Length: 276
Ligand SMILES: Nc1ncnc2c1ncn2[C@@H]1O[C@H](COP(=O)(O)OP(=O)(O)OP(=O)(O)O)[C@@H](O)[C@H]1O
Ligand SMILES: [Mg+2]
Image (cartoon, rainbow, N blue to C red):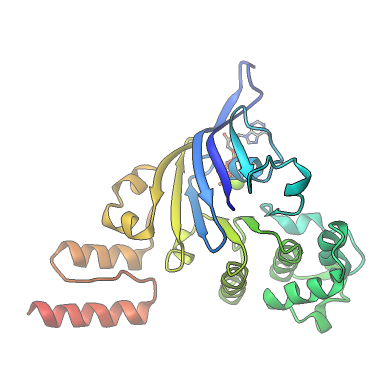
């Protein structure tokens, strides 16, 4: 059981003089329990890749397979859920509960409203407070979380999110991270982000795209062992990670690099003790 992209390429306006090769020869495998971070500079093909994985675009070459069938096959119905960039622009219903319940209801799930309320709780929106609100009356951060709940409510095996935390405050980002950890217990999750630092502590793997190609694909440990390819793709590791990698390069025996400032400080102090 996996969502697999095999040597997938996609060109917009293929064959036209201004055609764009947005994705070139990308391969990846997503299994339940995975949290895969996809990073890349603007225009590197991240959103196009998600659309290909969700079956919304047909690869120009290569293939996408969902649990052994093509994304359009009826057995793949409801298997993949996608949260687009700026998903809050797609509300349509009178209340947030009805909007969030649309996906599961459309899939014929028995208790769509309970699924909606569960998903709202997961993203930190109390359904008894927000369920009856008009989605159009929500603040930016609430709307983003509500829109993400719409995808979570579908109970998909593979969940693809395009910059879900962009523009959220610290509490909003933390609630999305928490929700994805919950989802991950029964789904494979891909997060496209300009701030991979948010997810590196828990990611099962990272893919960096550079002009549509996979510049780097591996575990976070492999990334930390040699960040040069990542940096050549125009990406930067969070300062707290760079600090620890520099300390390690100068001879400090840091076993684990962390995004948590408290743990990072404690590890640096302990490692200094070991060195002196
Ligand atoms: N509908 C379209 N028609 C033509 N070209 C497109 C279309 N959508 C995207 N592109 C081009 O394909 C390339 C990849 O775009 P994509 O949206 O996948 O990038 P991205 O990595 O998601 O960028 P960002 O970080 O800015 O969201 C870009 O060069 C973009 O201009
Ligand atoms: Mg994008």
